[in-house]
Amino acid sequence: MHAPGDTASMTPGLFISFEGIDGAGKSSHVETLAALFRRQGRAVTVTREPGGTPLAEQLRTLALNELMDALTEALLMFAARRDHLLQVIEPALARGDVVLCDRFTDATFAYQGWGRGFDLEVLAALERWVQSVAALPPRTLRQPQLTLWFDLAPEIAAERLAGARLPDKFESQPLQFFRKVAAGYAARQSADPSRFARIVADQPREEVWEAVCAAVRAGGWLS
Image 1 (cartoon, rainbow, N blue to C red):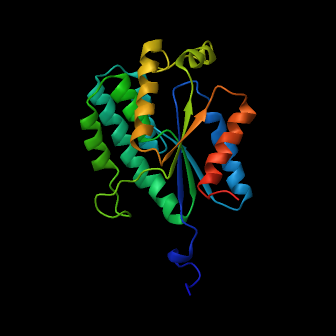
Image 2: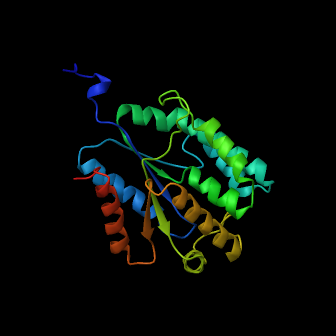
């Protein structure tokens, strides 16, 4: 029998990421899912990428607003991710929290890799370096246990974003850019289908929410 406070007796942490092109509606479901987990007695950490720590938020501001080449952009994203992992995500998982993250590494592959056309092998090397953490066995990367991919046609996403707010440099990209980003998400899902749950985002909000809940229940994480 484990003594009180023994980490082996704790509820294991759960890491869920939310992905999709700008305008897909993913962010509106993060807090709703957080509230549902809290009602079931779970501690929840809600965070985002790039961002989640003071340093990572500064890097986010640079990456989303300053012009730079694709490698510089990718390095900023992974530098922010490393700090975010060490300062927020890993401690939260060690405590047994549910971590809900608005974007993670799939976004970097989709936006910098497919959208910008940057070398996917370089991104994969950065992924290996940054997401290898002490809590995991060697050659094992920290990845979400579940990635909710909000799949929406770029044309519909553009309509949703029109006039919503002053766009950052990614949101202001042409439609063809978002077609490439959407293809990048599809490629990531194809490479790791057991991690991904595709959410058809062109539905009424209530139906999208039901699909989110069904995906989380399918993993045994909600009663």
